[in-house]
Structures are given as C-alpha cells and as structure tokens.
Length: 438
Ligand SMILES: [Mn+2]
Image 1 (tube, protein in one colour):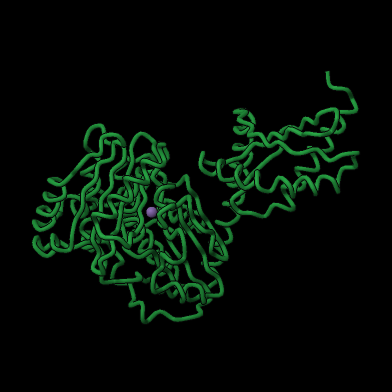
Image 2 (cartoon, helix red, strand yellow):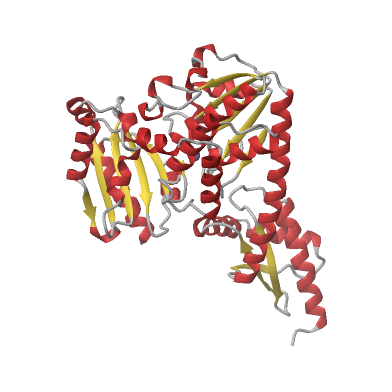
C-alpha cells in the first residue's frame, strides 16, 4: 500500500508536471500530452511518469523522443515547483491505456467540432460582409480543387459579391474538368489584385500549394484556409480544416448551407465532381455513410451525375490510353514490401502525345492489382524532377512517408517531388520503405 505521504507527493508531482508540459514545453512535435500517473519511490530518487500522447504511432514516437530529451529540464522545473528533500530522476513511460486515450479523443473531437462551427460562422459573415473576394485552389488542380473553387465562386457571384476566382497555373487545367459550369468566371492569375480584403484558399494544405498566387493570398487582410488535409499547416487568419470531410467540396457545401444560399444545379455539379473524384468514386477510405448522404443531397439539387462520370472518367484520350498501357506494362512489384510501382517519362509523353494533367488517376489502375499494399507512380516532370504519387490499401499509411520526403497529403493518398532521376527515386523509396518496416 502506498502511504498517504507518498500519495500526496505523487499527486503534487503529477500536477506540477502537467503544468510544466503545458506551459514550458513548446515544441510542436509534442502535441497533446497528458500526465496520467506519477509514482515516486519512497527514497525520492526516482519518479515514474506515465504519459498519454494523442496521435499516430509516428507522432507518439516523436513526442516521446522529444520528452525524453527534455527530462532534465522537466526535473529542474519540478524541483522549483514541488518542495522535496531530493528531486527525483524522471522515468518517462508511455501510457497505452486505451480507455484514457479514447476518452481524450472524444473530448478533443467535441472541442474541434465546436471550434469548427465557430469558424464556419466567422467565414460566412466574412463572405457576406466583403465586396471583393479572391479565391484560389492548389497547383496541379484536381477535381476537388476545381469543383470547390467554381462552386464557391458561383454562389458568391450569385449573392452579389465581386469574386476573383483563380487557378495558380491555368495552363495546367485538366481537360476532363473543362465541362464544369462557372469556368468562364476564372480570371488570369496576373489580373488578381494584391492586398485584397478577403482571400479564400481551398484544398491547400500549405500556402506553398498556391504556387505563384501565394504572395497575393498572403497579402490579403484576411486569409481563409478551407481544407480537409490532415497535415494542413493552419496558415490562414481563419482556418476551417476538417480532416474527417471527404473533400473540400463537402466543406464548401456546409458553408453554402450555413450562409443560407441556394444550391443551384450548376453548383451541385461542381461539388459532386469534387466528392466523386476525391473519394475515387466512393471507394477510398474517406468515404462514409455521410458521403453517400451528401451525394444524394447534391443529386437532389440537380447535379448532373451522369455528365460527371462521362466527362471525368469515360473520356480518356487515345493518347492517354496508350500511355496507360505503357505504365501498366512496366508495373513492377517488390515482393517483400508489397510495393507496386511504375513510371512515366517525358519521352513517353512525347511519343504517345498524352499530357501530364491527364495522368491524375492513372495510379488507381496500378492499385487494383491483388496483394499490392502500397503503389507508387513516378512521373518525370519537364524540369527533370520526378513527381511521386503514393497510394495504399489495408490502412498502411503513406502520408508519413510522403512527409518524410518533403511532400504531403492524406494517410492513404500522398505524394512528393524528388530531385533525383526516376531510377534513383525508385531506389530511394524502396530503401525508405525497408527502413520503416525494419
Ligand atoms: Mn481535396
């Protein structure tokens, strides 16, 4: 049995360490840490400190490593806060207690929802109160970035705002989204004003994703960051980042509803395109019952769901189809990591006549192969660098790999750019996967 005196010491240390973690440890890698228990030996020489850390395995590991290094500092702080004959050495132990972390997750989730609701209200009032609004989405546009951009632009235009919707590099506009309504509203990036009162960035996990528009976005008085990437850098003045959302289009729909704006068929078609493409036609892990409800809602509002399929999926050029053939032919599998990979060179593009923007979904054809857990597609860019796209199945997370390589994305769909040539890029990725699996 623990004597009362030691119980008091444990309690005092627990409280003090909690404060120290909250007030003194500012390292962003530490994240959400809670002291769940402290047990000091009767001779006061050692204190076992149990910590619960929220996050992915990798985040927990990083946080523990940082805290291990901060042990000496924490001990010194503890000595100043709790009067003891001797300040114990700290032994930091990771508390795996599932019910504790689940409870914390629950609390965190509630806080997050409450916070998001407030941000949603702030965004809607900003959109209603500002006359001229800049809007942009990310470089290398996809269905969600274009769909959410055009939808928001049309709604605000209909509400009498002067909108300045923009794609950072318009010449990279994927042709399969050329049918989307509202496209005629897009302005040239060069015509976008600096220092606007309000600027909305859509689907961009970090401001660099705005490419040539980054400076203009950041010169705005208020920068609203709307996104669903879990690694979003929260770079906006206002941030509405919902990692549980299937797509940015889903969040834009929430904004439209909150604003009481009507959902016109053209707007619904744009949002539906975002949802369909970002969920891989309702097949990726970000698909939930909520996604189907959302799709139903958009279809009811008049989204042309058949046109979306026809234009986006059943519309590939002969040139691209031949390129796809090459990529499929080259698919190779590294058995011990269940990695499947293929590549496309500039020469392939020249010879087939296909263009890089057309290859956005090519990787999904590679993923369909049995027993492959991670698939990588290496695309040689014009400047010689290589764009690497990663997809996974069975929950193996590729997001951390992409981030370790200087890129980003979602847990199951991510990417990065490599400065090495294709052969070397492939080798580096294989090495990286080998390291991770030990
Ligand atoms: Mn998206």
